[in-house]
Image (cartoon, rainbow, N blue to C red; front, side, top):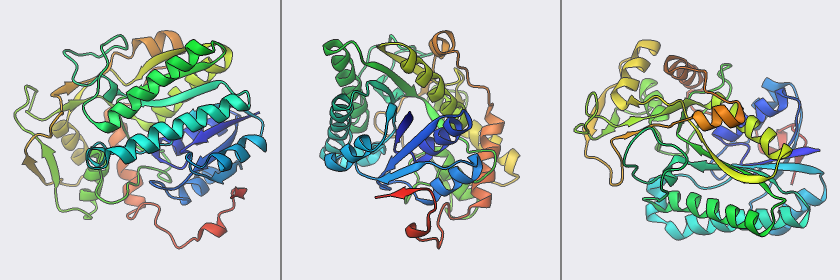
Length: 350
């Protein structure tokens, strides 16, 4: 039986695919390449030494999705697929609501039709809105400050309602904090389209000369140096958290949320300082005004994941910066390659 990974060619999805394959799982990847590259899947195969099925299908394409389920025996789904840029969601909210929520509704309906009721959902710490204090635990009040965050929160509520209606479902809601880093091989990493929305790819692109300077949003927060503090987690630790959540949903019923973070906060300027030391590269930056909705400090209480999933983040901030730099230095233009999609040798299926 296979694990279906939606959005498996993306940043977190590709790293999770590697860990699934190395742990002995059979996987099937589904992706529409809206914010990912086919080459990432070649490299997943290269690193793991294992093959897997792939479908280029959008979750809004119900008939295409049904073909995936009809032609494979699927035990569980890890659901990454979705639009994820906060700023973009403010500009095109209807597109975000339609894509993220409708896509998930179609996925769950098809899962139900084919008797697949084990689901690990890629949620986000954005569902906590602007928390009154830190560290943030799973029982905090939930809210959202942008359409992207609201899609995550709405989907969480939909999945809870699904379980109330049918208690044979098993769902883990994984609330990520701030993923950075890359696979230690330097072969896969974060490769955003256009201007990066996240801190680390912006830093690494400045480091290799693709961008002139880093923009730091705000310098007057009540923090150690005035810049915002976040809980940065290595993407491989995050991927391993999905494996622990998968074990949970396969072996029990219910729906529950888990923070995936380190429990430690670092400011933007602290990250810049560590990166400069690791890479021996100066990162010029410019202070600009705060972004609406940004909070001064956000970091997780990850104790529930430790106690109930047996998971803890093990990689420190220096390793996160080192692996991010290795990826960017080896791949100046990310996955950009002359290889055409037809040449991808990963059991490609349309």
